[in-house]
Length: 486
Image (cartoon, rainbow, N blue to C red; front, top):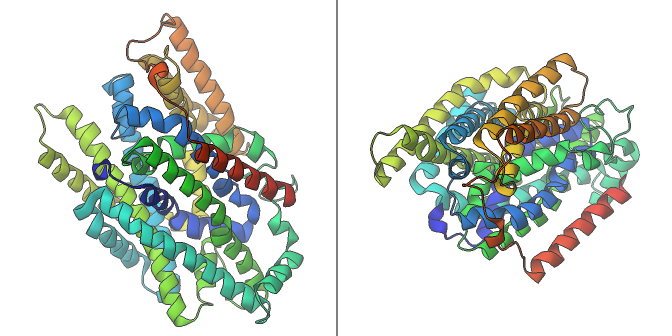
């Protein structure tokens, strides 16, 4: 937890650095190449989710002095719920998050240097181990500050050079005008039903439906390697300032990440870059337009962002395994030194498995879409569990286990029986059905307040005037973006 000493600027930068990795930079840019600016819904609306997390979730977690999300569930329910969620997160972190980040990073290295992707994966894994093992969360968070600056600078550099070349050295604004006039459909924030990508981003439902928000609140509110940054704050107010800083940075991400993917489609038509056969090649291909010195700096920014996320995930793998799995099965009191050693062994093991599995992802066209759809099988139930754990005193251990199991069964069944049903819609349906199953179970069990339930009356949810003003400003900016680019 970095000694619970992180300042707001380190928290905000670290939140973004942990989030913006290969799956965003390369994967989302690739979706920008295919879909256009509509994919930015996952970046822009995340700002609102961050504000909600800072106001309603953080006060509860910091009040309870939580180290891990499974630890909180053990306090609220029992070890069964904690262990179920621990094994779920370890599986997802190792087989989905680590593997996709490693493989997309290795593909980017291959595009720019020709290095075999397997060797690239190994190098990235070793690089991440080099400082996350020795320094823990504090080392990860502090180096994130430098990496976020490099990341944003590198993204703007790619965009500037690309637009300038598209305009024939007549400036970025003329280049942007050329791209907009040639491909106006790429700038639609809301897709029409005749768009080939409508099934993945079903029109206005991405804003008013439950699916995107389920993904956001599950990720930003209850994802261990994200919330661990805010939990390392020296105070609640410092954590909230850091999360607000991250919300502002989120508004920049479509320019840094999605717009280069759109420019790649134009650059390919103008034969400024080679033909792109896979969408995930869009961002690395655009980087080849940079002059050598700037290419090196931007390449460093990309590797920094990838390694930052790898280090964040591995840090959380070590924390969850040591604190929630190893301690649960230990027959005697475990020393702090033993916990640290066990956590480090889990980190090495997790990365080793991810390196072996990563090449299997080469058959997928878009790994960003793969991540969204796969994690969408689990997130509705996860969100139900945490919401009732925090805010509903009648939730029982059995009711949340029913929610977890029914969520997974329903998600897989709907996906198999109705493959053309948009996964965003499926997430909403599963969320409400598994929530109803949780309610019925609690009703059958007596519908009474549970002894371990959180007393919300003792929690202060008030926020500062500055926090409230910034929340209004961010909401206004988002409204203007969607109104102007509808």
